[in-house]
Image 1 (cartoon, rainbow, N blue to C red):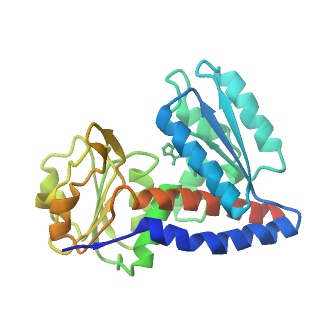
Image 2 (cartoon, rainbow, N blue to C red; image 1 turned 120 degrees about the vertical axis):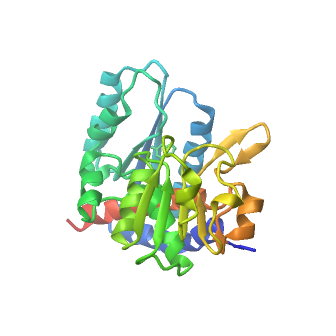
Image 3 (cartoon, rainbow, N blue to C red; image 1 turned 90 degrees about the vertical axis):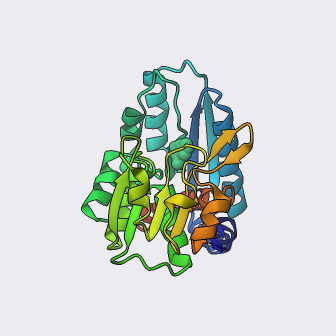
Amino acid sequence: MAEILDGKQFAASLREPLAQRAAALTARGCRPGLAVIRVGDDPASEIYVRNKARMCQRLGLFSIELHLPAETSEERLFEEIDRLNQDERIHGILVQLPLPPHLDESAVAERIAPRKDVDGFGSCNLGMLLKGQSGILPCTPKGILRLLQSAGVALSGKRAVVVGRSLIVGKPTALLLMRENATVTVCHSRTENLREHTLQADLLVSAVGRPELIDGSYIKEGAVVIDVGINRTERGLLGDVHFESAAQKASLITPVPGGVGPMTIIMLMENTIEAAELAAFK
Ligand code: GUN
């Protein structure tokens, strides 16, 4: 039976040291500041953005939220981003996804100044990751790696299988695991015989957004399983992994909720504080 890899508890243990770093910056006259832009009224986004603002308050960061109507033009959104790029109180800018369909998420990510791109979704930061250099890392992949390190999971030389090839999670997670010397396979919606791949995995990361796609029959005995899925269904919030059957096989497994989610938000705080430190000590 697997042990639980408790992201909620580990993320909570990171709060106090981050609050201290934020306080030290504030004392030097450079209080870390995060701006979150939300366009339209996606109900899940509203909750995520509220949680981000609460965490800023808790750690002593300055935060502002800009809520724009769903019909906001690209031009208007870019004006707001340009203004925040110039605003010295703001060290991190995040545009909450998904955006309404008339807005190009990729173009929006490019508009954010790379030093303030705390999501790490712009070409500059993603390119640095691709090259193995240290830019700003996307929050969820960074949180996954930290969680694995906190549990002492060995990655070097191990087989990792990432299910999902999104720019937000799948691709950057694969790159980070490669940097840690894992042997990485990326599977996706067109992969044939998915189970043949996942059964090889010492580490399985699922980020596809399909409720309970991965059950115990996909998991090698003793594997570490990271479930990035947050799927809202009639049966409530479900991960990509069928927890009960997967836990029979895995040695370590993240729950949903309380696994990867809390790590993402605390890494956003860390990225904002790091961006402020760079601004303060430049
Ligand atoms: N929507 C869901 N996850 C994320 C994230 O990590 N960043 C942003 N900007 N939007 C999201």
